[in-house]
Length: 238
Image (cartoon, rainbow, N blue to C red; front, side, top):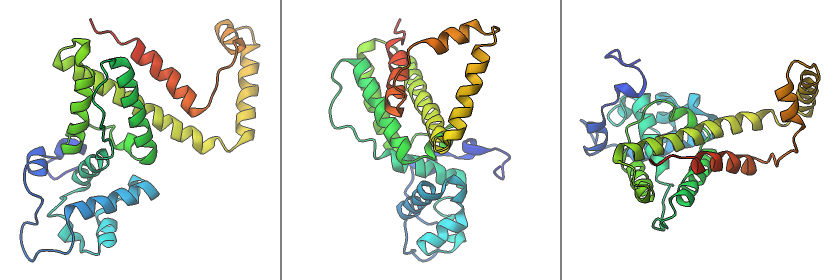
């Protein structure tokens, strides 16, 4: 909660954050920069999770006093905005859209998935509304170009981008959670026995039929591809 009573990303004013130079307000020029502060925060989040990212911890990483950081990032929410846009710089697309918007959009989603797996804190950070910074806007510009052949209006294109990003973030969050428990064969065996018992009790015929169907590859890549194909191939452009 910020001092003005707003919570989360709602308290971040995008104009001073993205439209004004990142310089300290007063005093001697420090030996660090907003870029260095953001990079240190990203490194902490990548290795230890978002909870490890505190102003005090980041200050220690860059060798600064906590108070000196507030000229660059007045609170953690502002720092999160900087972190999200910083790593969005990795989403560089050099090839122009091919004209096959569905194929191009699937490529976009795969880029996002790989990106979020590199930075496992991103699905959580993206769960609240973020104001796109310059790197995020550059990626959005590419996605809007990908969607040009659809004939959708601007608002609908933005909705498609939000829909794909939300799908990828949710899927990656689930993927990370599943990976955390996949090392327990006893848990997997117990789940299989439970579902088999439920399917055999006669009260769940639809589930029994679904479980009797031929299995499909359950690797993370194969599962993501199936879900992604269903989503994008079914997008309505009317």
